[in-house]
Image 1: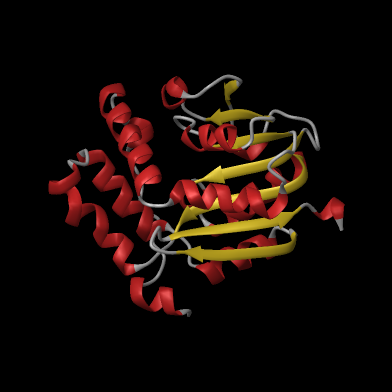
Image 2: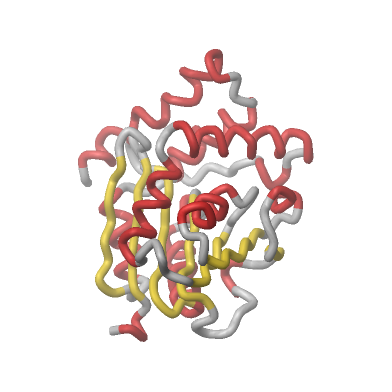
Length: 227
C-alpha cells in the first residue's frame, strides 16, 4: 500500500451519473469540468504529457477517448497548431461541444484499424472502470497508436476528495459535479496502481507522475510494437 492509498483508503468503484443525467444537468456539469481543468492545473497536465513525446512544431494525429465536451482536445489544438484531434465518446450528448472530427464509439472496441493515430489519449476516463477493464482499454489504445499512449486522470487522495464539497459554496459547482467528482476520487487509482495497470497492458518505457496541486496522475507508455 503506498502513501496515497493510506490517506484515501482502498479503491471503491462508485457509479457516476453524467451519462444518465438530463441534457441540462450534463451540460452544466461538463461546463464545471472545463472550469476545474482550466483553473486547477489539469490543462497543464495535458501539456506536460504532450511535451514528453512531441516537439511543438510536430504534425500529428491524436485520438481523445472519452472526450466528452472536447476540453482536452482544445488544449491540444491550442498548444500544437499542426495537430489533428479526433474526439470519441460513448454518449452523443457529451460530444455536443466537441470540435469535429468526432464520433460515438466503444472504447473497448475502437472503430479504427491498427496504428491509425500517432497518439491515443484519455483524460478522466480510466477511473470509471475496474482494474481488468482498465488494462483492456490500454491494450486497445496501444493497438491503434503508432507512437504513444497518454493518460491523465484524477488521483485517489484525501485532499482531492474534499475539494468539491468544500468549495461548492464558492464556485457554485452543480450538484452533479460534486457527486461525480467525489465518486471519481474514490474510484481513482494511485500512482503505483496506474503503473501496475500499464505494465500489465504490456506498454513499454512507462512513466507515471503525480501533479500537485492538481491532484492528477499522468502516464506515458509506448506500444509494444515499438519495442
